[in-house]
Length: 452
Image (cartoon, rainbow, N blue to C red; front, side):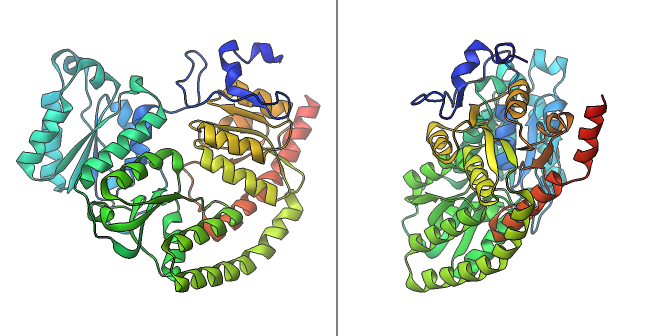
């Protein structure tokens, strides 16, 4: 299909092809174009996916029942203790509530949840319709805190106030409200908070295992496998390290401003990024013994993983990959992983990448690579086909597109059940690339298309 029939004029500035328009910059970090059917999620989704992995919290969705089902238990986050977060609660607003207001219903829902579960913390998400009818969610939550002596924190997340990235910010603001605004001058040595890991398939535990060996204690993982008690102790950490920059950089900046905790961005996706992240954390602490233990750990793990990665590389080298993921940090790490496997990245897009991340993506990619922000299915289909991609990496919304195109697919979103972080994750990723690219099913699909 000609590109003029797929790419809307107002979308052209969000798409560039490296090497074609020298010096051109990509539009990003802006609201989605109305009518372009963006793959982005809403404000509520952004807030919920960040806060949901807090294991002993209750999450009440103040809105129609559909909002609650939309993001209920959608992450593959694991817990080492409470499973409270796997429940979902909603005020189930109906037409009568929209006309006369839903504050009474919200107060009743909080009362019922408190009586049944006695949680330490409740997050109340105000979704689109609540923003329209103007319920005073702050007042209801404040009164509930006084009545039941627990934390009840509103999360302002109506969809019309922005996009998924706005939801990330709302979640960070809720976390700051939980941790409080008192400065903590005294820090515990050799401690960090690990921000932006949601413990998908135990990934946060893999990283914690490395850090323990290095001699560094994690006070709080935010928010994978987090709890009320670990979160309120987070201001005592000496450093913050941020894995998912898109969702957690705002929180890291606020914690630096309020508690004086410096932070560094890290990426634990792929061998190169894992090695770089571990060394960065070791030098951040600055202790000679920590650095020595880190080097020993890296040397041992590299020996274990190198041979296995080379095996998969022989099977997938030369193939072409398309990437469409949520944040820029993940896209950057994926480009490096595919490059190490001898593959060519021909399309790269994100939902919430910023200009700094797109500049890095541009430096890492080959000439001819299509780079696009906030894409829709038609654009992804067109560029994946134009560039003859063999594989698409995305999330739940991109999976059917890949299969309809007869293309191999890898789920790199929060629904997945296998770890992709650290040295173990790098091997898992390479194994999955091999399995999906070299699956016999693609042979039959291609033969069928030839027959048609």
